[in-house]
Image 1 (tube, chains in turn cyan, purple):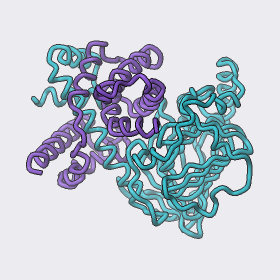
Image 2 (cartoon, chains in turn cyan, purple):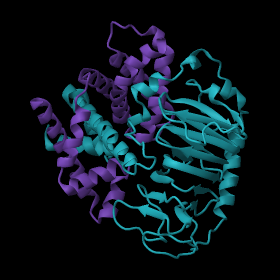
Image 3 (cartoon, helix red, strand yellow):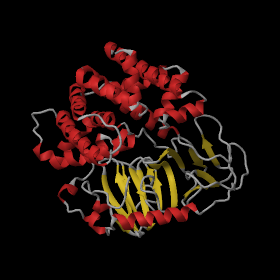
Length: 326
Length: 168
């Protein structure tokens, strides 16, 4: 393949190509099937790289002691084969449990929430060293909501791939926050009341934070207690674990995960949970919980605690999201 | 047993489906969501699948239709390839499928063999999920320099994997 086509395909897949460049590539795909093959192979390499690099990072901390590589798309044949596909024949029970609101009401509520959220200004104190954030307090300006550690201690560390992290700095994509055995931390967003409390021995990583993609965090081990402000539909809070994805539009909940087990308990509001092995979805409301486990995974002590109703019978692969834009 | 049969076909074809959807959408999160929709449709229509035909080709045909639907709804305002180009991509993907695919096992060694700077850019792009502009900002370089670094690194990785396949 020539270098010019190489660059064109890269720019196309990276989303930096201009309209004219996309036109040119489209013409070349139509005129030469080999070019279509090159575009596909480049996208396939993207898939391979995601597969190779994301699990390597997630397992690097090996927090639970049993963390193995987490496969791309969260699926392994063994994990997926354990799933029940009875959902194919079941009515859409979980979906029907939820009241529907008209888009106008929903958008109105979201807009009102955002106005309220925009009025909130957090004070953050700045104490501590590069690797040990203390309680922070800093006046922040209105604007895109950014995440900071607002409460922490010597047992809280931030790992940044590009260099050292200073305790007053906002958290950036790819940063990893880790609490030690005797430490907790609170991560909060500047212009909203969203707070995530990390229990001891918990690790999270900011995966992405772009409009249209949501504020995506990975909980790779430990437990989070979250209070989430109403979220913009194009920027919901999304929490990934090795087994599941929780999409949040405004609620209170606890999310716990080990390398093989995830548990979501909702205190207020509703969270949409997606099981990564088969993309089945269930809505978990106040007073309910659901668990997802990998085959053969040992149940943690906190698994299936007798609190709330288990909605694990309502996983559905046919649920279409309602009221949640992702 | 039907679910086991479905998974036996679906799981090996996921990466090809993801690559095709990524080529169409150029957005990782859109791709993940579309793959979810495609897997739902595949499961719903699995009764109609003819086992005499390659599963991935059948699945790519359905994925192409899902991409067209997505274009009509979510992708308004975003430049998306024409129907002909999307069809050509689906055909190319169907022809390129290798089962079992040896490339995943070979790629890690090739990543480690990259020069340090190239490996760092690749890790920031894929492990960190950073957009090119942010990588450029963090490394204090021009966007164009990062684009070229990615082009060269990907090229090196493809050549390395192909070389290893040849001599494996």
